[in-house]
Length: 195
Image 1: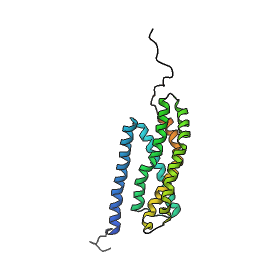
Image 2 (image 1 turned 60 degrees about the horizontal axis):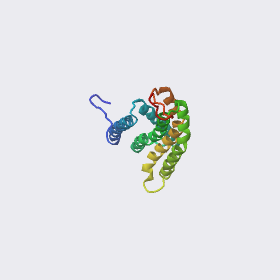
Image 3 (image 1 turned 180 degrees about the vertical axis):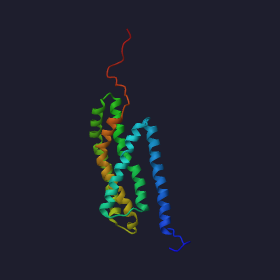
Image 4 (image 1 turned 120 degrees about the vertical axis):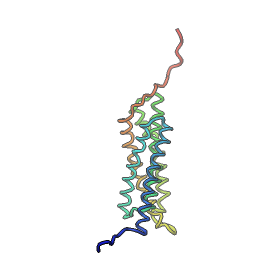
């Protein structure tokens, strides 16, 4: 290019870059707000961190699904990722809450993790199947304007499918390694008599 002449990306590409920047901020804000709500609910800073580990697992599933279907990353797919941050933490919340309830009743940590996994397997599978089956028509591309919404559905389906599988494997292991919270043993006997 001649001296004094410069080039700059503008138009639709520039708008897309601005959109991605604002969506990245929205994604971080969503994860932060989910963390704050869970920290107040569990009264712990560690348990929400363990639950949020589901999000990177879900992102892996989304990337695989987009790669396998040849879907490009666009604004609609990014909105699907933001939705995914709220959807996939629910199954971990259900699992960790069940573990904590069992431990409050006096069960050992390992036994509580195994029992919670057994008790919560069916609800986790059912809720995730309904999510996947509900988004399947959108992912296939049925209806008018479906090509616009299709990347969002593919992103969410891939993330939910992989996160559901890994939640029952990775989250209990991380919980057992990181959790140091002490629970009072449940009283099985009646009140003690004063001497």
